[in-house]
Image 1 (cartoon, rainbow, N blue to C red):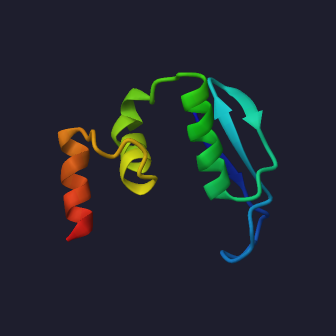
Image 2 (cartoon, rainbow, N blue to C red):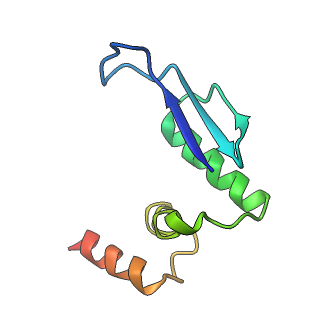
Amino acid sequence: MGLYVIRNEGAHEEDGPEDVGVIIEGVELLSNLRSISLGWAMLFGLIYTLTLSYPQELKFTFEFLQKVLMNLDGNKLSPKVQSLKIKMLQ
């Protein structure tokens, strides 16, 4: 599961992406999203709606994004993510 971002060859950093989409289990579920932030929001919405588990190798990354940056269910942090939050606030 994840996002894909397609940029035109030679595009500058300030140029928007050509395409942003969401892939889950090898299937492109969404495409032509306007921005990477919208892509993340849609990915989290799909994970929640479809009651999917975070990928094991990225579970702390997803937990940090959900609970610290998006402030969703932020009162229940794993010890690893709690330490990251504390470091971020210092």
